[in-house]
Amino acid sequence: MNLVDVIEQYIKEEVNKCDNDILEVKRSDLAELFSCVPSQINYVISTRFAPEMGFYVETRRGGGGYIRIKKIPAYEDDIVNNIFDKIGNKMSQRVVNVYLDALLDYNVIEKDTAKIIKVATSDKSLQNLSQEEKDITRASIFKNIILNVI
Amino acid sequence: MNLVDVIEQYIKEEVNKCDNDILEVKRSDLAELFSCVPSQINYVISTRFAPEMGFYVETRRGGGGYIRIKKIPAYEDDIVNNIFDKIGNKMSQRVVNVYLDALLDYNVIEKDTAKIIKVATSDKSLQNLSQEEKDITRASIFKNIILNVI
DNA sequence: AAAATTATAGTCAGAAAAGGTCAAAAGGTA
DNA sequence: TACCTTTTGACCTTTTCTGACTATAATTTT
Image 1 (cartoon, each protein chain N blue to C red):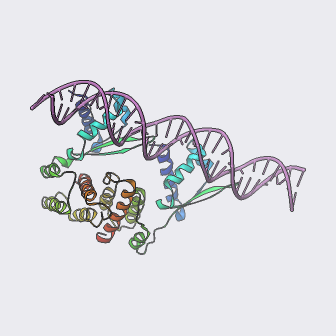
Image 2 (image 1 turned 90 degrees about the vertical axis):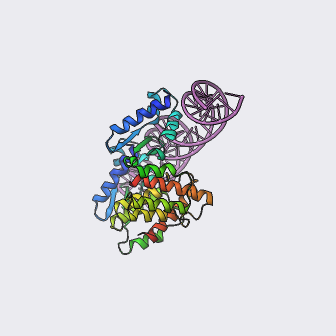
Image 3 (image 1 turned 90 degrees about the horizontal axis):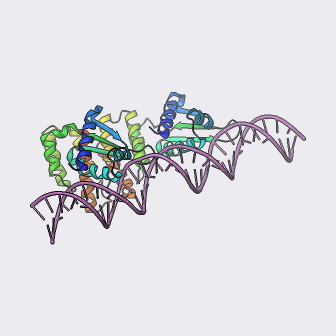
């Protein structure tokens, strides 16, 4: 497993441990913990904790600076509609996973179903298409499944 | 025996040795092991480990990249095997339905799964694509899901 | 209060570490 | 010979990691 993956997993676990799903850390502490340069942490944050991946990140520089990572709460009431509304006409594979996780969290779908949707919308299944077409098709498939199956 | 065949056999043995029949290797390691160019490995994968042959292959580029080869056990089933033999790289919506009915008939898949496949491969879900792209993508989604649910 | 210092975090470009593609050359076979 | 399969290599793309330099906030000094 890559360093990014290790750090990503660590942060996710820590976030889950926290009340309100808000974690506050010092970038330099993380860097030290994983023996890497501080900018590696920025790399992890930007590739794995972007808003479209279901996280809000706030930071502050200077003395007492921090990185605050918050899991975006899924709205319990009518999560399906909420997700549907948030979907634009393009979706990356990662974003699909974020929503599937949320749907699983709230027991809207089962693990097997999530797996099937994941495969249906995977880059692998859409491999003959360009990146743009992949993302558009993914969003379309996902929406249709939500409307017709869930 | 050709190099392709040697590598094919090696991979098959290794996959069998693995738990869950999932093998993860580095392309460069394989290439080194068999003293060949890395792209030879791609040749082996694409000619011997295609979905039609009962394998599911995922890869990842970049640092820490890999090739993951998964054997689909149920592929030994005659029904599945037969269907895969017949599917080309394009499928119309009608053909998808025919095969779904067959798979349902033989209890290879469940009703819910069939429904998701039907929606995912519908013209509606693929509406942004040309007819040709629709049919290719449909076949790809169909194969990938079947390989992952049976 | 202003200036200097210290403590953080951010940015960006380039190196490194993979895997992918495609076409040409080589080898076999009907 | 004509065709199909295999092998090779040059070039491409993606992902990760590193480090030099920049920006901002708090604290200390003058």
